[in-house]
Image 1 (cartoon, helix red, strand yellow):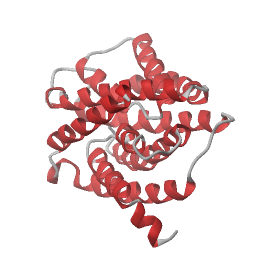
Image 2 (tube, helix red, strand yellow; image 1 turned 30 degrees about the vertical axis):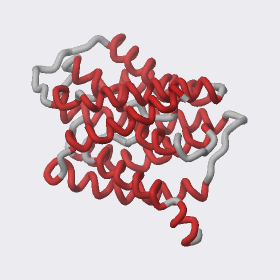
Image 3 (cartoon, one colour; image 1 turned 60 degrees about the vertical axis):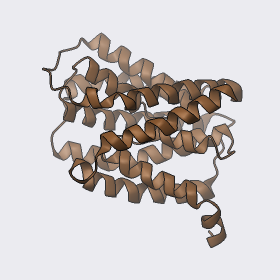
Length: 252
């Protein structure tokens, strides 16, 4: 690792550091933003997916431990989501897809993520009584989101959290905890599927630096949480960035 390498990639490192702080403060991994950043670097799309998932795992692992200590998991509702998401995330990660299809799917995914984050102020503010969902609905949510997440290279929290808030699945804190666990297991499953794909490649030199960066950023974000940051406004700024990148990808 040379100073020249760090200097040449300082902007990417800074963006990853900022994203990790922002997302960790609200219980997310940041996979959609990592993809948005990496999509503009010229890296092979197979490397982009793997790097984003590894960064996801590093960021949300600490969040899962924290929420477990706080007893924020209702496993009767969480298990169906996770149980069906893992195999589908693995399949999605294993699938061999073309570069053009990947970037189309990525563009649509990022645009959806941007819209979700932009409207998240209304979603997070909801304190309505949670609803009990059937096992089949939880399983279908997990399976569909897991499959898409595995193909694109994200943990799926950016899809799951808005959906759970809109359906009054549980309290906001328990939804954040569930999203963190969902991101962790799906990122691991998706990465496993990618690893078994013959086309799997990764730029370990850059990825190692980014993993260290997001680990530090994630620790800072989890400590700061909502006491010192205003994640709603920061998420809106991030949403604009992701929307710009998604439209650029779709129309290029």
